[in-house]
Length: 228
Image (cartoon, rainbow, N blue to C red):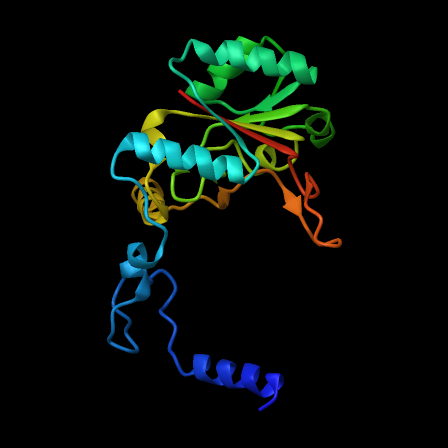
C-alpha cells in the first residue's frame, strides 16, 4: 500500500467519527452517546504540580523555553523599578496601553507618553510606540502561555503590533492547566464572549525559511511577563 493510500485511508476512518456540536465539547455527544474526550482532558495533557510554588516554577520554565521573559516580583513596589530599568535599556519613548488597575499603575510608573486604545486611536501613532502594556485573563502553568481577550488586553493591537509586549498580571491569575483556563473564561464571560480570545506562547516566531527560528516576524519580538 502506498503512502497516499495510507493517508486517504486514515482520512476515511476519521470521517466515520461524528464530531461534537460547537460548544458541546465538554458534554456527552448527541450523535455517539459517548463522553467527549474533552471531559478527560487532564488525562492526556501534561501534568502540573500540586502546589502553587510548583506551578509557578513550571510556568517560569515553560515561559523560558518559549523565549519569554517571566519575572515573579516580590511586591507591587518592584514593578516600577523593573519597568524603568527595561525602558532605559531599550530607550522607550512612547507606550501603548489600556485602562486597567495594573496597566495604569505600570504606565504611571514609567512617566512616558501613553497611547490608550479604549476609545479609538491613531494606527500610525500606535506604530510609533515602543511597547504595548496589557493586563491578561490568566497565566497557564501547563504551557507557559498567557490567556488574553480583546476585553482584558485593551483590544487586539496591543499584543501584536508594538515590538515589545509587556503583560502585567497578579499572582491570583495563575491557573494550573488549559482546562482550568477555559473554565475561567467560561465563568468570566459566558454567554457574551469577547470577539478575540488568544493564548500567547512566547514572542512571535517563524521557522519557515530553512527551519531557522526568527523572532518577531509576525508580531512582537519580545514578550515580558511581570507577575506581582
